[in-house]
Image (tube, rainbow, N blue to C red; front, top):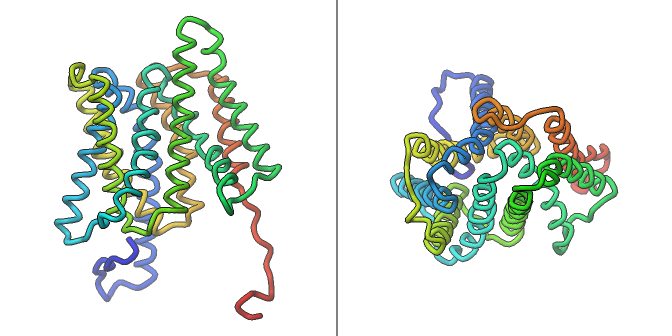
Length: 323
């Protein structure tokens, strides 16, 4: 990470080789993010077989937060000061307790692949919140068009289940919960970007996971989930996968890739995750798959691409530095 001492590299290694190896590691970390975070939707679905929803996230993030804190202390690195804890608690609540908690709760009724596609609409909420914030980027005709395309894809994706009756009302509530998860994630990201004090990335993320996990454990206690907690080999394995791979390895890989690669490159994981989630849900859990799912998913991804696209700035021969 920035600010840390670079790893020792023998002096006989040419600079070009060092850069090439660093680039390969960075892209390897990015691939890990694409794959790992695409599989967490399946792991959540499996964990729900015997673990109540709030406890899935509470156990996952509390343990991951403590492990990261212990690792940082063992390396002699300082944690964020207490004055920054309220801000980190707000971010952890928005990103984890709401952003991830509602996803876990919704997957009780929404297939994992469809959940991943709906969650991929988070950039739509991000654009809207940014437009409402002071000094934020205003919505353009292109952005509004992208929002319309994306939300049309979501409607196409979920409408048959809503119109089928029976569990349609429960399914609708779950889809709304997924959108609330997107809203929470977007609000947390916006707050972190605009109002949170600069922090060491891993230390801040450890505290965010700990605070978010504790909030989810409190929710689980209020909801009486501890009496329904049970572990099977499948659910325990899924929960362990979420802790080790989803939180520790996945997030560390994300931070490393973000430090070494352009943000525009790293953000492409949002296009890959839903594809992996849909494929795994279809192959391993026999979730619904057909041309409607493919078409609706494509519409959502196209909408995201339209919202995120930025025209290349025209080359200027007189810059502010030279004027």
